[in-house]
Each structure stands twice: as structure tokens, then as C-alpha cells.
Length: 492
Image 1 (tube, rainbow, N blue to C red):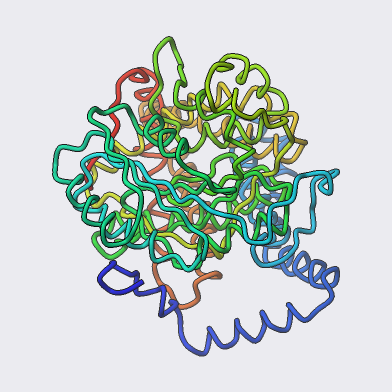
Image 2: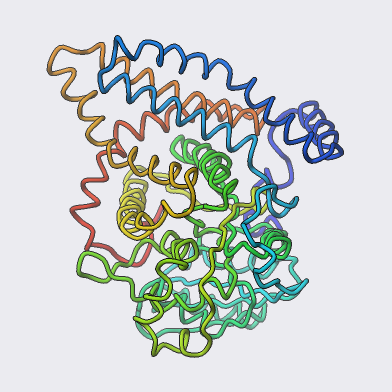
């Protein structure tokens, strides 16, 4: 990529001092040279040592449970324990599938169909009224260094000049452009792209993203090396982190959500959301379920959100839900043309496959985005939540534990920030806020560990405060407005 594409400066100049980077490089090379079992044991030991202060705090709270067995004590202990568990899994159990062979393989992984050594890739994008972003995105797609790449862009009824930009790019770069006369929605538009895609791997991105040149190759390498992987998520950061305080907060939060939350899920092949900025799927893992995806209905109406979560759910749950979904759309050419057997695919995350996205710079668009995500969470809970317990105890604990935390958050915030002050229990409020800041600080320290010398780790506690004081209230609102929504993202 070139500067004309808006290349993030940290793509060429990693954050942190040169001495810190040299030390990390030497340590990394030394660990790579170790026997895999010895390296795994050393990583687990270092992880436990790093978490010792938090574990001691958890033990202290646990000892006091018989004397302080109220819901606040239980909640605080659960949050601290969950945070420690996520950090431990992310830093001691995670392997980047594009870099090395996974330690934890699917049972019977030898029976999964192997991809060709160099599979063909279809890189797909759907846009509507994105004249300000689409050129940089499509150029970064075409600039991928993967050799056998088909780029397909669908213009879903744009009226702002997006179509003219795409026509010029098609002539210059040789990408395939599909022009729709009327808007049919993002999922349906992407299914139109899939109808002409002939790749063994289908990769999706969003129109406000810039993709690293090697990102596609890394996702494909992970799938070729591990035939049991039905999908791989890339690692996303903010493209505009310096635009405002809000964008800095989001950038640090993105890093943690991928590096820690997705890494913990990936250790067990159970990433529950292959995020839209860079989402790679094996063709046979999703092809039969594309009509169900485009025609998804919830609460008695077409559901236009949950684009990435729902498609990931079809990969994770097709062993239990796939046959019924295919029967429902048996007349679709996506089903009638070739029936792929239902498999217990794994879903992973590659930290080395990088993508950057423009995040909202102002509060109102940010809140609109969060409401969309809450709606997607609610819809997906009713689908993926119905089978996730079958994926194993740890994936189930990660999924349902997170879901319980999100669902309970509005009530807990009301208890601590509204009820407690009104009933002269300000100490309870202060204790809650202190716990929120502690959790945010732990995530911030993890950011600093991965990005030495980058002072933006200090913004992570702000995101925790924002989550508890503002974002938690959006879940009830999202539930009440599930049937309201439009195709496009709110402008930044």
C-alpha cells in the first residue's frame, strides 16, 4: 500500500522504543527456537507469574465470601475471575494459525477436506453511498499480494456517485463490479457477489477499511495448514486513532477485543464473531447457508443486522442447525447446486492478518454503531446460544459468561449508579467504579505489554467507564427498537 491509500503509519513504524522492539525480537526468536512443548510450558508459567497479583486478589475475595456473600461480592469476584481467565487463555493458550500449527486440533481433523496448496480467493465487498471511503478500500483490496485473487464489489443502489467511482476502478484495476438498480440490503448484496465468486475461500471486508497486503495470504495459510478451520478472523485496529479522544479509546478497545477476547475463543476454535473488517470463510463451510443469511428473520420481521455474527454462527452450528436451514431453502441454487456435508468446523483468529477501519469520531455516530451491535448480539444470542453448549465446556463458558455479563449489565449499572446513591449507599457506588477502573487497567496493561512504549494504554480504563455508564443502557433500547434499522453505517 502507498500513502495515497491512507496507510496507517504504524504499519511501517511499530509503536514503542527501538530498544524495546529489539528485546522483544530477541526474546521471540529465542522462544521460537525452543521445543514446542517447552515453549508452551514456559508461556504458561510466565502467564501465571504475571497474573499472580490478580489471583491473590481473587483468593482474598473468595476467602471473605462466607462473611460477605451478597450479590455485589459475588459479582465482583466473577468479573475478576473472568478477566484473569481471559488473560490466561489469550496469552498462554492462543496460537496464531497463520504462523504455526495449532496445539489444539479438532478431533478427526484428518477427515476434513484439504484445500489446494494455493486456493483461489474471492474478495467481496458490498457498498451503498460510500463515495468518501470506497476508493481507498478497493485499492487496498486490489493491492493484496495474494496471487490468485478475484475482487468483486456490489454497488447496492448508491445515489451519491459511488457507482461512477467503482466503474473507474473496474477499468483501472480489473475488479468486477455489480451494479444494482435498487437497494436490497448488505447481506443480500453480498450473496449476489457470492453467486459470481468462484474462489475456494470467500473473504469479506467493509467499505471503510484498509487491508494489509499480506492479510489475505495469512488467512489462507491458516486454512491450508488447518483444514478443520471453516473461518478465520483478522486483527482490526482503528485507521483514524488520532482524530479524537473517542477514536483513541476505540483503538485501544479494538486491540483488546481481538488480542484477548478473540484469542481466548480461538484457542478452542470457537470464535463466535468473525468480524466484518476481515472475515475469511471456506466456501463449503458457508455456501449452502447464504440464502438463509440473506433471508434472516427475527421477531417476525426481516433482520438486517448481525451480518458477521450470524454467518459465523452457521459455521459453528451447522452440525446441529445446518440440515434444517438447507431444507428451508432447498430450491435455492446455493443449496440445490451442491450439497456440502455439515461439519463441526473450527473458527479461529489470526493476529498477524491486519486490517484497519475508520471508527466514529463523534459521540452520536458512535452510539448508533453500538446500538446496531447490541441488536446483532440479541439476535445472535437466540441462534448461537441454542447450540454453543455443544462446542465444549470452555467455549460454552466463554460464550454464555459473556452473554450473561452483557444482559445483566443494565441492572447492575442501575443498582450501583442509581439505586445506591439514592439510598445513601455511596460506598457501594465507589466500590463499583473502582472495580470498573481496575478491570480497565488490567486490559490497559495487556495493551502495554503488546505495544511497549505506546502510551495509549491509559485510554482503556476510560472505555470501561464508558461501557458501564453509557453503553450498558443501550441494550434495553436496542431490544425495544429491533425492527428499526437501515443498511448503511452512520457516518463518522
